[in-house]
Length: 419
Image (cartoon, rainbow, N blue to C red):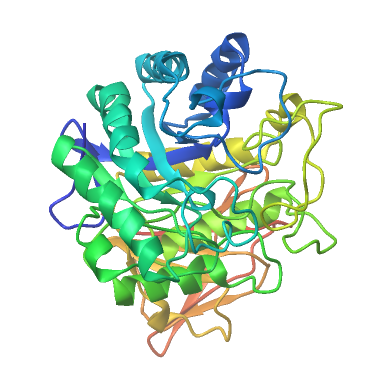
């Protein structure tokens, strides 16, 4: 079972430090066959993932599927389809047997009035008086599998009615399942959580998202969320997805290096309880020659098939990041940008322990730090090929300048005091 650490910076699983590494597979319950699910679990487990984020109800921008898994009989939200929930439970049991934590979204924003999504497509909005029955079914189906419950999905909270829906769901589920942890999944680049809903939350998610107009979102949102909602573990639960088209029908796609940068800059800026990966073609579970509506959601270009998306290399990069931190026995970080003398926010630095500092450097340059690191070792890891260089540095007048590294991609620098 998941718990929050005493210092409120990270999570525990069965009492031991747990770095949350999730994959977004929002459409699992509606679009994936049992054989496909078996392969998906095998591959993500091999890559080091330990959590799967799933939408309990159908994802509004899922790819077209020939499967007929529907939560409501004849589309009637008052008539729950037991077979749907039984099948979803069996999928979750398989995942749990493979060691995965389930992070389950209770109400995606298109099911709630007043949100940005339901204002575009109002047909999915659930009547308020059907919520209790639905939430009780969620509890009956999943709670004994010890999930992390994500009350909202891709949500904003623009109206009192919107807030009332989410507060109602949170209050019912928290009373039924008090031992589970709770959070929300906010829409991209959004930082507001209603105060009454916030009281139900054990950890905080934010979404830096897929908009290419502001590349600072992974770390700037982290800094903002820590100021607004301190003393709770923080996770970027939806950075840019690998190979997804830029949002807003903007031409371009997020590449492996972009996805990696989002992870490292999020974590070193204080969102250090974990990170979530996503791949275009996986979250919607896209199949070749099947439809995908780019008009829904944020207007993304057509994804590749799920088979191709499973081979995207960025997933291995995320597993490597998790492995690095676990080998260093690092689960809590304190950002210390104040000692960086380079005139950029893109280089990120955090203190891990009294004798360990970590840096992410996206582009090659000398790095100058306002601290004397005489007697420390500096190791530079090429994140594309995972080559390692032992970096030269110079200390002058209390400042340390790390020489340019020999690599051509982004790097992770470990500064460790000699013993």
